[in-house]
Image (cartoon, rainbow, N blue to C red; front, side, top):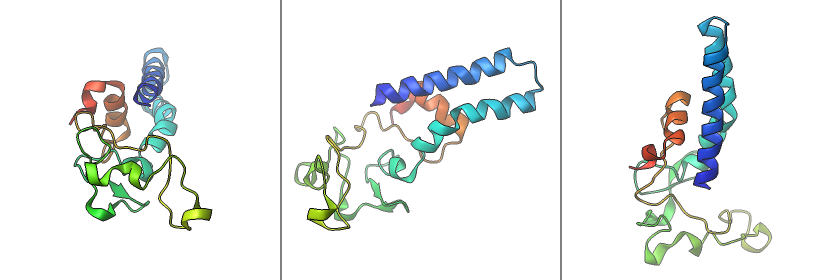
Length: 142
């Protein structure tokens, strides 16, 4: 997943760079055009559901409001939670609302946060800094 995100960001940032390099339009118009190229990716990465796991600390957030995760869940070194509270205990490969009720936790194969050494923080960055961060994997570390 991180390679896919890096690829998308690199392509977008590359397109942004080419717009700046090739444009003969005034700088103000060029900046607006360039920001439009990265906007769809920024919107996804800074969606509340993505930001809930791409956090500066070690306690994930939950819901669209970014509330501190219940059960005192913590990241763990590999991003999959500590032994007694692994993400997969609740976030299974598939969680069916029909079986678990309407408030079932979301499910997906291999649900986890980024590992401790590569947090990929998306919270609080403007579009330019987010693009630069995603484009340079060194910026993903804490």
